[in-house]
Length: 253
Image (tube, rainbow, N blue to C red; front, side):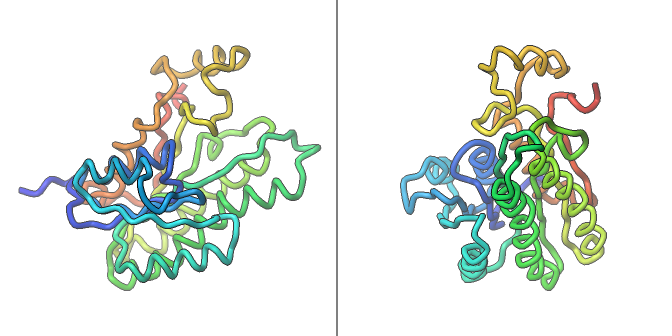
């Protein structure tokens, strides 16, 4: 009997796959059997860490390089992805953040974050989702955050973008669930990467953040792997429009 978490023979596109959470997501999907198309602005043509990990899992890896803040580059990327053949899984993980209080948050910072974190996730979901809808099957995973459910401090553009992603997830799920395409989102909590709001070494903010996490620790990038595989696999075929927190219990506190 085939495991409901088996992704053998599936093709997964993962944006922001070069490092951090995206790297962990790509590796987890490869270990579950998927071939990986890894996208990043700085993706090496060969020899990247993500390529090595995917190959170690016995799966194929295709690197694509694109600046996801550039709408024309995203259009070219979509053409490159479509040329590779059908995509079974799209993981919209790439994002960015700008930490500036609202009263001095510049237009350029706002536009950049909204473009990368919200608009590009929508455009990729729309274009790749179109083919999924035509085939009658597919899995799309957006990457939201805790700030989809609560306000942030000094991150107005990021808060707006990730809040928008939560509602976008539901909107697309409402349209596509009956057509065989699952759209869901993962909301990471405090994960120890270089994009976190208060890195574990931040002696001022780390104690208060840690005290709020019932699991008693910051998350690691590989803590996102299981949720990614679940939402990409047949195990989640009746899961639609969910924003799944992976936060050590933060939102339940």
